[in-house]
Amino acid sequence: QVNLVESGGGSVQAGGSLRLSCAASGRTSGLAAMGWFRQAPGKEREFVAGITWSTGSRTYVDSVKGRFAISRNNARNTVYLQMSSLKPEDTAVYFCAVRLVVSTQYDYWGQGTQVTVSS
Image (cartoon, rainbow, N blue to C red; front, side, top):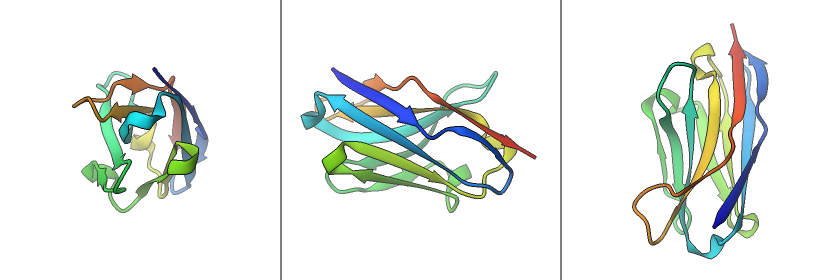
């Protein structure tokens, strides 16, 4: 079992910045990757960014490339999402998730944190 706790959401005007954090606890020795997803009202959840735990390889959805940056602190089992140049369409509940080395999908999810971007 891996427990995830997100923080850092809030409200910001378009063009502003926010940094999300997600701390993992529990069975963290088997982490393969951590990722951020988001779900806007009436829309399906979408992948935003991911980072592999051993090499730090990063992937992003096209809509956030150049604006968002994912990073990790292995010692603290924490992943961050630095969001800049925020747009109203970035408004969503953001979830962090963990993929274990024994899995091919994200297995554990945080409770989500709201990000609201006003125009």
